[in-house]
Each structure stands twice: as structure tokens, then as C-alpha cells.
Length: 429
Image (cartoon, rainbow, N blue to C red):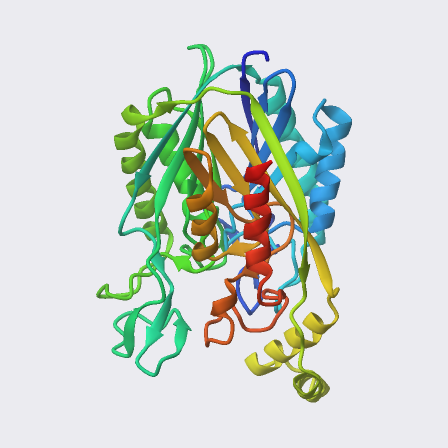
């Protein structure tokens, strides 16, 4: 085994004015750019194995975008296509690549993105230099919160509102660790830090494009940590986590709050940095594919949904919220009965990054982390393509937003457990 080498590259992927922005039921179009969006690439190679980890400031990537970018990278660089890993930071003020609700896919942005990703990957590959890896972790309370709550009527609701007197308690207690995988190089090269934190990137809002708090966190880490490292951010599993504290005096949000979150994470990183642990070992990549079943659609409900959509479209006006959800049910019924999703593990010594498809609930990621044979395990979501909630089986049938039948929640109960078992199987290899 040769010495581990690490390299970093990035490319500005900010959209043009007028680009559809993803994240909400109603469509929005970019009125400007509040802060730049990037594709950030980490290249790793130990001579025997090479991998590119690429984080893009988008809500989610479509399969055709991932395939196009992988093909361009494989044609340029000596990295196997399957070892080019894509993650989305899930910014809700980023261009739409996956059509969802009323927001269309931006074909113009999708056409530009693969070449920009190639630029980041190519830069990272040619920046490879001997690196010494280390790992640090810090619990960061008061930044991210469970967003599903048990109400007095016994139901579970998503985002029930700040100060809602009907709230009894959060559905579950969550963990909010900031994980830092660092690669320190000789003084002529900037160090590199891969950071991960579990919280929805839906803080900024509005119609200006923004990388939300993940982008601000990368800036904070670069400015605060010794050596001013290059940084990239992977979203920890946070399908049921966001930035809203229901016990606060008022709802938090906006760009300034994203900056405050990033500062808190930056402060935690500075405190944890001196305690980082050396990491030694070869690169180890494991992957498997899981067939996830589509959730069943009740024929009577489907018939009613089609009637609602037909009736509303007959007037030629914008669909009501009821009409949008009805159309989602119709489109859900047209999805394949099973969908193949990859689960992957990237390990260096005693540190493992588990890559999972979709927006994963914390109960599932906690099961993976608790059963991991590695000393330090980071579960990162929105790996590869697609945007869909992945829930524990027991969370179906509630009144939360995440389990409502739609393209954003297409999987049958038990799909989340299949991903967990696949990850545990990779551990046992």
C-alpha cells in the first residue's frame, strides 16, 4: 500500500436568474444569487484504490445527471465510475434537477452541471498529495431539532409550530454530532476537511439562490481551523431534523440564522480540533444494491385523485394544494414497482462513511451507527440520485408530512429497514 494521498477541487455552480429552485410545493425562480453554490470534490488514492467524493449544492440529483457526470470523469481520470460518489447538500434554495410537486427540472442547469463537476473532480485529482488523516467529533446541541412531535390528540405532526400548546414531546430524541475527517498535507498544500452534520438545509428560504448553512459552514471551517483547510460538506441523516426550536420565542430562519448556525458549528470544530484522533489504514470501498418496493396505492384513492386533477385542470388554473397532492398520488402510481438503490461504505482505518440514498430518518441511521464495527461511523444521506424520504416502518400512518404518499415518499413500509440491513451486511464483509 502506498501513502494515502488527498486532493481537493471546486467549481462555482451558481444558477442563472430565472432558474427553477427546488424544495417547496409551489415553484420559485431564482431572482439572484445570495451566496455562491459549488461542486466540491475530494480525491483519495492509496495506489490500489481511488475514489472521488463530490458534494453538490443542490436539493438532489437526477439519475441522468449522475450518469453524465460520471461518464465525463471516467473519460478524463483513472477512477472507476462506481468510485465516483455524489452527494447533495439538499439546499432548498438551489436549482431543481429532480421535478417535484409544481417545480420543474431545469434542463439548462442540468446541461451545464456535468462539465462543472468535471472541473472540480479534475482539479482534485491533480491536487493529490501525501496526506495524514485524522478524525474528530463534537456534539453540538441547540442547532438542530427533531421536527416531528407527538400531539395531545395522539398524532405525530411535522413542524407543528413554535409555541404550539398541543405539543406533548418530540417523537424521538436525536443526536446532533459534527463529524470532521481531516487530511493534513505538507505546508505547501492546504489541508482538507470533510465535515458532516445532520440538519435539513432549509434555513434561508426566499428566491435568491444560496448554499444555505452547509455553504456557510464550509466558509467558517476554512476561516477558523488551523491552516485554513479546503472543505466539503456531507449532510448527515436528517429526514426528521431541521433548525426550528418549537420552544423558542419565535420561529428561526433566513440567511442570518444560517450564518449563526455555521458559526456555532465552526466554534465546535475549533474546540474539537485539538482532540482529533490519527487514522491509519488502506482505503476500503464496499457497496451493494437493494431493491426497494414502491408503496401500494389504494385503487379507490387513485380514482378519486384522478378525478380531482381532471376537475382542477379543466379550469386551466393553478392547482390547489389538494390538487397538487392528488397529482402526486397519480404520479406515484406510475413509478416502478421496485427501485434499485445503492448502499456504500468508504472506510479508512477505523473511520467509516456510510452512504445512503434519500432523506433518512435518524432512527435508521442510529441503528447503523450503533451496530458499526468501526470506532467512528458517519452516516451521510442523499447519496447518488433521487430525493425521497426513507422512514422507519413504524412511522407510516401518522400525520407527518414525510409519509404522505407522493414521489417524495414512494417507498413501502420496511424499505428503510432494508437499507439498514444492507449497510450492516457491508460491515460484515
